[in-house]
Length: 480
Image (cartoon, rainbow, N blue to C red):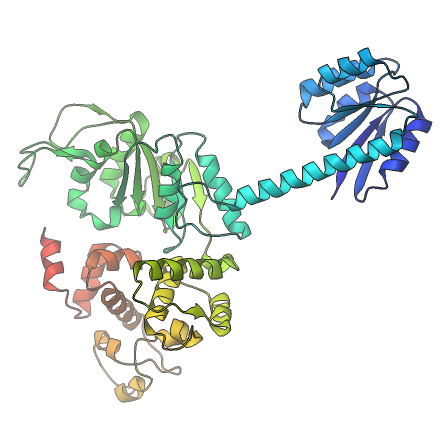
């Protein structure tokens, strides 16, 4: 390892001899000083160990020790003296000296031993710190990773715990924004309070204000009783506003006032209610572009994005893919003991490492669970993962069946295929995406909108346009 040492002695011959002995330790960097004043002035060089002569002209060794310890109490200092004076040694130890060495009494052997001991302690400390950085905090359930981007993420999350700033969690869909929000809450001083999750994209715009801030009885048609809003429910804890970009401008203004003074009024009420809530938010949209087009308030942006936390894409996380895959495999088997345990084949592991994972961690989880269900071999094969081309929605010969002049309804392409040489319009692709997501989400409009990163109204519009009828349950949900 690299060990930085200061040798401070006004005797150049002894200093050179001591430096010569210490250089026998591999990786040692030695800086010599002729006075205590110069050594104290150079503490910004961050030495790992200082050998300091006791008797020097000007500032003596004990005074230099006192100043070093006042500025950098963490640096071990070994006092070196030509005289073995017990009172001086005791005074040095009292001032914080690590050890005391007498010149000429096997001093070269002793200083090397001390330097090696310090080097071992520093190496151990660095290994412990590295391990600590790689082990998630208590409460980081489900956040798995050892890659550099994840170590950076863990460190950033730890920094969010130092205060109560509003945190904006930014990342693509499927990167685990809610998991990060919950980890921040559970490890913060508010862990004993409620953690309220709000999916802004799933709340009809006309009900958002009531959901956020509550309403009084009779404030509007259907308000048969007082309703306590989500911000009041989160009092003393944390509220997580997912998909914050879905808020309309009117509600953005009201939210800004709550963030500024922690006060709100229920819909139809005159009472000002004081709340104590930490706000976390998340988005997969480019809010800076929304500010430019006028759909997001700039002043709210600066309030919400006080502390941004950026989540890495799964494709940037290297071997974490395999760690996560094993994590999801173990979790699924624990929930479903009736499923036969299968490990990943070498081909499956290579495929997971080379795949781009456009759906991020969520796609990986789905792939692992699906593979456990469909695998018939002793191990999970590459084909069991059904990645990339294996997930094509349609038959390979559909384009030929349609022909160049076909006016087929785009929605019917869901039951057809896209040939590699065929040109498909953007509208057809939209129909394919909506139909596939709707089917994967078991006909749930809210989940479909969330997975595609759009609003519910957008899903309804596209389904109507492409003759993709919603289920009766979703029609009822839309009316409520």
